[in-house]
Length: 433
Ligand code: DLL
Image 1 (cartoon, rainbow, N blue to C red):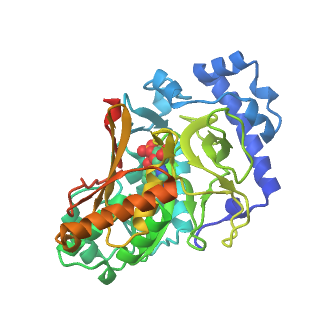
Image 2 (cartoon, helix red, strand yellow; image 1 turned 30 degrees about the vertical axis):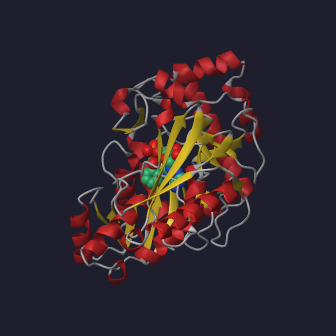
Image 3 (cartoon, protein in one colour; image 1 turned 120 degrees about the vertical axis):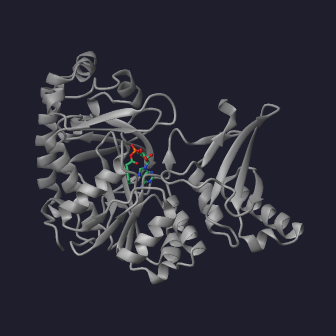
């Protein structure tokens, strides 16, 4: 173990005492410095001093993405601009991006959290990290970069894209750890294969993948194809970026939330009620150490559950389940709720299918129609039409039996579905147009 794990292994009681102290400080500060939060408190009749225990957190109003949009770009900052040293933004599929700011101390906190994340995933100062998360307004690239340097590892700031060159660098520099989105990892394998390079001949021991949902079956696919251990990392710009939670290399089961910096809650997405451990709902975060952009009960829209059980790695911080989707990427197809990740799980469990898929939703004669486009290998694609039809039929049947929704399945040639350098676009919903 390279990193001092005191904060991650402390007894619950001690951790909660720290959380409460930091929470109170944060609430007083946002009340004094951010007009939005002051108004929220005043409207709800609660004052920061009324918060006497962690239990009381549930009385504070939520903050939503819309609130951030309404205060675009810098209205939610809690420090003067001269104290802000970095600005990031999340792309957002519609409207303006969400803008976040960091003080020098925030960058330091984030670097430490990312060093802790990398360490939890098995990284050591001796590692060479091939960092293929995009550098720029997206928090992935720079987040990993600062964490890797803080840990003392060597970082290759390759960013996303220029995939052939990435493969050459991997061969020549011998990186031992890779960081990128899971979809880009699969694209890298594909391009490497075209170049006659097998990941089994590279030096990777682990990969840290996140920024988009991916299933357990996708993990197996990645571990096998890239010949490494794959860990899931989660985060969002609004909360800090990557480094909010990560799977430990020991268990690879659930993502430890860095609770000494962020307080997680799970709420019912419709009623807003706080749900007990183990129940699935929307993840909400309160940051308790950030200076420039603190968030109070921020609704992430991500769906997961929290697990407080002790972990074999010794960390006492709660674990969140893999994020299977967002409240806003749930498709409702003829009344059935469908998450892209559920379809992914069905597909990945079948043979002769490549891990590249896209869901297209149309409304035909007032009826929702979900088409699942899936790539198959060149060999399967060249088979008789009957073979393809049988495969299409069995995919459709498996989806119907597992998720309960009827779909049209379309098998397509290799590389038909656009590859992404960052987050994959899994859904094209033509109904909104
Ligand atoms: O995606 C931060 C990040 C960078 C995380 C690199 C991990 C690795 P945003 O661009 O603001 O920030 O997007 C945040 O992406 O609310 C989730 O919906 C989704 N997301 C992030 N990590 C995961 C994950 C970064 N491991 C949004 N599993 C979040 C599922 C994820 N979804």
